[in-house]
Image (cartoon, rainbow, N blue to C red; front, top):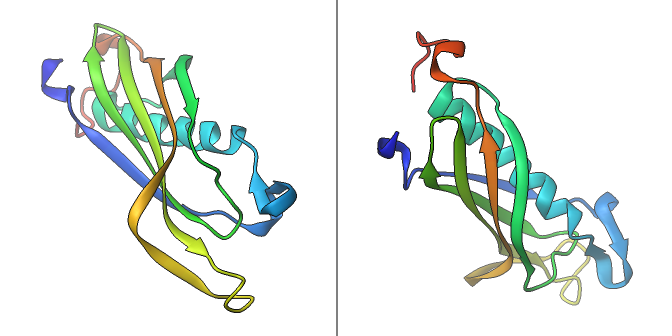
Length: 137
């Protein structure tokens, strides 16, 4: 299983204005955690041929705001691979940001992405004999 340590999966997502929850078009922190769950699910599919189950989060850090109109990039990297559990690190980065001061639909690509949220987590997958071994890993 050490062959999967270091593997990274990345998703990008536009944050719709319908998800703004607070003043200044701020999105609640649970939005990033939901995306971490999505990228963890894809990781489990790639590594184990199964969606797996999210067992726990650890060390969640909210470092910068995520706003409606942002494009965020969410990554999961395998840091540990046990028989059925996988340790993952997560990072959500703002790569584009709306600039409503320019015009209502203006936005910019950020030269230096903003790290908004980081976390660690553990997922659990079925034992290898329980998975579909004919799937491509």
